[in-house]
Length: 229
Length: 170
Image 1: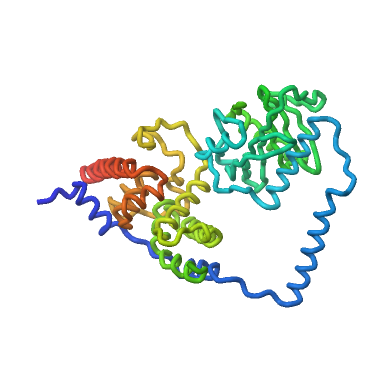
Image 2: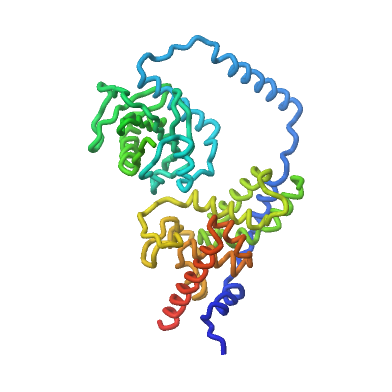
């Protein structure tokens, strides 16, 4: 008689006895609907959207030609670039949303920055994506997280040997003294780890949001250790 | 493969994907969300699918990656064995919550035992034994060598056997 717990028997039992769950009709319907190409837009709406898109395109093309005030302070310049990267991710999402920490060797190769330890999220901050970035003529790394209230946080590391820390904006958070800066409606934590400048950007700008933003900083800071490769 | 054919071919695997999602999440609403997200991604990235390869395995792979991405809430420093699976008593960092409010009840010892397996073990058994995927396809879904799949199946059955014996002696 065959042992019911033999390898072969277990395989057969799994195939025969494990209940199979059929997809509910509602799911089948919604997936099928999602699979169909969208219905054609009404003609007037298509024209309006086309005009709006053209206007937006022209606006975007001419933006670089408008006179801009570039901050003289190197930290502020970097903060502005990091905020721009955060805004880009907010608007269009991460370029490589499928990159998970398993792909960190690839990120290191692309960015020149290694992560000895990396915060991959917890019950309050969910890891969204990781990607290499090029900001202020430097290769760097950006990790994106989303908090339980839906706020996106962007953690950026850029090589910045000799970058001075803005002393006036530094605040004590746990055992660290990062600088808390603001730019274009975003809050930014700035700190140095060796020759690397680290930033966390978020729209947690209100006074009431600050305790959360502090906690997020501690979470990332304590669990992430970038190094220059 | 044109887009219409791709969609209808992909939809033919809906039941299998939902079944897999149920065993991963143990929660029907979450399983439905997971399957919807899987199809959304598959349709969005249909151009990346190589015709002639196994569509079902590709869809399973997307589903599992989506599951790991969205459900990996905590990473604990687990002692990892050679085949990448933490040891017996080490909690898995990307298991779905054990007994949350929407969780399904297990009706048989086999089902109960499957639930107690770490995700890597549960997945290899579901794909290889229940869905009947060839080991090469299972390896592709799990992004690991075929040898690792074989080792995981062996260890998964070992654990399953232990759990079933425990249930019998209670």
